[in-house]
Image 1 (cartoon, rainbow, N blue to C red):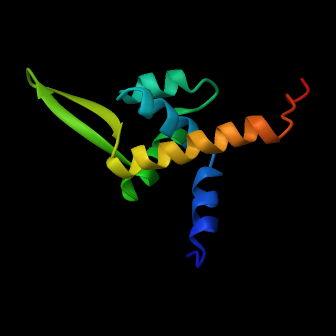
Image 2: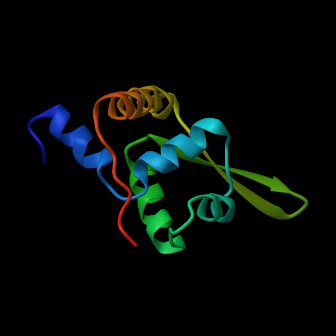
Length: 106
C-alpha cells in the first residue's frame, strides 16, 4: 500500500505495457488478441495480467456483447481511464521535450 498518491501512480505507469495499453485503448476499443498483436513484443499472459489489474482499479472495462450465441469481448477505457490517458499523454510530451532517449543497443 502506498501513502503517496504520486508514488502509487508512478508504480502503476511503471508496469510493463500499462501506458501502451492505455494509449491503445484511448484510440479505440479493442478485442484481446488485437491488443496483444498491436503491442508488439508482448505476450498474452502479460497483457491479461495488466488488463486484470486495470479492470480491478476501474481504469479499463471489459464490455461483453452476445451476438448470435457468441460472446464478443472488447476492452475499453472507463472515464477514469480516459482521464489517466491525458496524464500519460502529458508525461510522454514532457519526456520527449526534456529527456534524451537512447535506443537500446542491439
